[in-house]
Length: 484
Image (cartoon, rainbow, N blue to C red):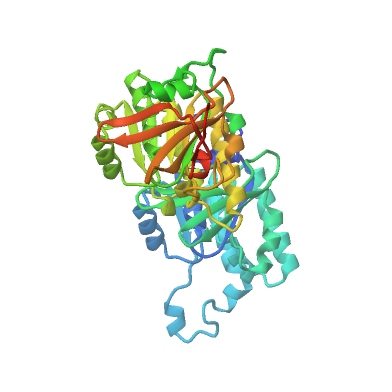
């Protein structure tokens, strides 16, 4: 992690400092907006816990509840002072004229004086007001309210107090609060998926787009920034080595193998052997002391290892020896930003050189929203560009729907991302179904422009000689031709 800049204050939330180009600017005010349950308070508490002198001013929860909830999320508030301005339950049952606040509190003078006195007395370096919109009820006139809040922000800036305020995005009247802050962060929640976006950033740049925001027990909140390929690059030589599949006939089709630092798409219908073919590259990489990793969207890890063993592959041996990292990925509970973070971790921390993603349809399930096709292309584009800039060989397993018929390189329209495209097909011949394979594209070298039979059994992967004397093989129903 890069050292903290002197003009920055850590947000306390993993990943958010990166989005904000180093953290909050010292002395500025950030306004965090979002609906109920989006995680605004968690963000505020983690911010306070990250410093030595923090003050929390809260209007909705009792101090005991705040501390208990924070502890359950692994947030240590032992050095944080809490000013509890939540309404006492006794007022409701004592028959006060005002249900929540007595008359003098509705006027707001006493409470505002208490807030000012606490800030003076504590002299905090970090301040959180949760929610800021609650102060509106203390100053009913909107003009006076905005003037008071503007005056408060200016005074805090003069004292170099870095401040985080929360507001409810559902309340239209709170939009004016966002204009008063130096930084605005919007949190959105859909079912169990949260996203965070910086919509305003005064005096600095911030990473654009919606970044995944996850809250977990014992660890609190974490932001997973969008992957920006241009921010990453690893030095590598001009020469491109080739990665062998370990099967001479497959290497012959590829004229030696796939180049390191390239993107390879292996496509074909269900059961054609795509994952098995990709696994060949993983095991030969591991056997040649190249660190390799496989991410399994389509099947359970135990099933994958069992099936690999049944085919005579050395995947389990390499996995047990730590030469091959295999991760089972549940698409429906993991966002593409979180997955990109996993890829970065394996590449940058574990020095992985070969990565297989099995497969693209499962990866697509982690996308949210209606524009999934456009999003899929954009997310995969960033992932591919990142791997290429880091010199990592990336293998994408893609399933096409058509068992026979016209050749479709990929159903996901990602063929432009690939440096190499290896395709598998079924064909009917002599009353039985056979498999064939071929190479459609190889950007960094020549390849064999022919088809070969493919067999996968307990003895492993077997690739036959070039098919000859046939036409229409790619339609699935070939015809014999007279070569004479």
